[in-house]
Amino acid sequence: MKSHVRKSGQRLWIVPVILGLIFLYRTEEARTFISVAKEMIVIGDSDVSRKIALTFDDGPHPIYTPELLEGLKERGVVATFFVTGANATLYPELIEQMQEDGHVVGNHTYHHVQLSSVGEEIFIQELKETNRVLEGILEEEVVYVRPPFGDWAKSIEQEINMFPVLWDIDPLDWCTGNSNQIVKRVLDKAEDNSIILMHDEYAASVEAALEIIDKLKAHGYEFVTVDQILLH
View (cartoon, rainbow, N blue to C red):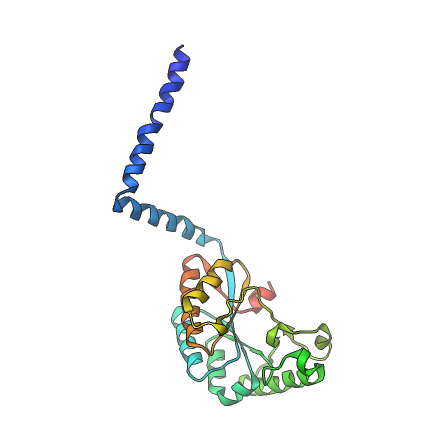
């Protein structure tokens, strides 16, 4: 009998506690406290180093690339730019700025051509011509290539000594002007060693990229260039 009474008494304290929590949650102060606590739990993982890479295709753009470079510099973040030879020829000073700020510059063909459309011979010529332009500006070898549309063939690697760089997060920023949508698509898929595909020729993309950086840094992510992920 005594044992039964003791067990019943142990359960009785749960009821007022639950009722008290329900009452507290109805107050603004309680909701604020719980919200802050949840955020602290998420950010608490920030001690665990997680790397992620932002990459930008198709540039440089005379308006949006400078805005992006300024935003990256303010945040102390590096990225990887896969530029076309045609745009690099038009805006060599932006290529120089990328290098000066610690970003990696890669090859995106000269005219943004697709391998399956133009064939291997022309595609390789496009890569070589873009390397000639970039190496003339950077005074260093260009070793990374982002094939337009992700169209690549292993046989090309026998003809040209470059590393193809694809991606695992594509927010389709090129077909929407909604920066919030771009941010959400990236945050929903972000994980350690992800490579994010974006473009530095749209206002919404630049705005979204900087917001993505701010949010992911707050959750413990370190932004790196693609070599730090591929060669890890």
